[in-house]
Length: 281
Image 1 (cartoon, one colour):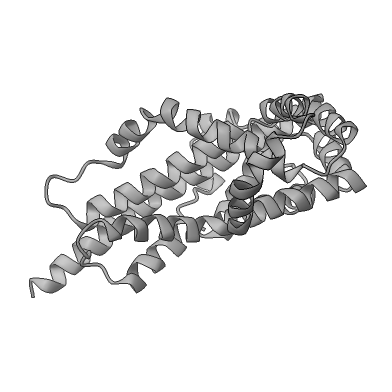
Image 2: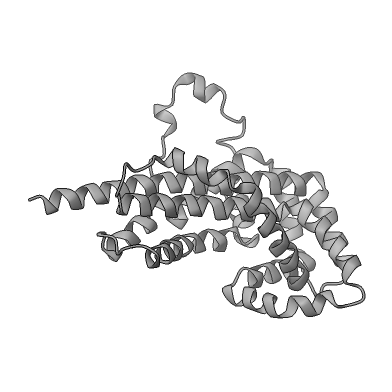
């Protein structure tokens, strides 16, 4: 685990204001939700996404002094999937009741819930993005496309898919820029917080682009799902338990990614400093 503070070292005032069920949640239920919802696989993809982002930036800049093995090690440590999942489990378990978790699991274990989870897993693959680009225009020509699009816009609004996608993209971008800045310090290196502030200023522009891609992706991913099934899905998402779950999970995922990004910034800075010390010997 990375820098997790145990309860034994927390001040008494902090312990008093922890969520009332912070130490009492059913970890088995939370773990089931994380696995069956696809969050585990999403977390497992993060290290590769960060590495690919850095490699893309490296093509536009001079070769950094850091060895690729050291870079990969820093990514795997800071964005360790097991550590990130542990943080997700703590956040979700501390903010959802056992009853809410059971309601979410009842949905995920239902035939429709399983079917949609499989479609969402497929939609997360790189191959799917290529398929979408080629097939979307054809789907939009369908006579019923406008009504279908309206239904999927309701689904997107309920899921907050665009906001989740934007948060993920921006937080990965912050980690990438932070690493590139540290590896090629031609001028005073900005702090992690300064980089985050600059990147977050672009949120409106990024959101405008991503919103169109997300709705288009939903249109293609759910192209064979009957409208009635989508209505059932929306009803679950808008239910008290479904709405609460998506709100908590979205924030937990974003917070875990931000924290890992800070760890990565520190790890890269330490590696650069270590290389500088060795080169001066």
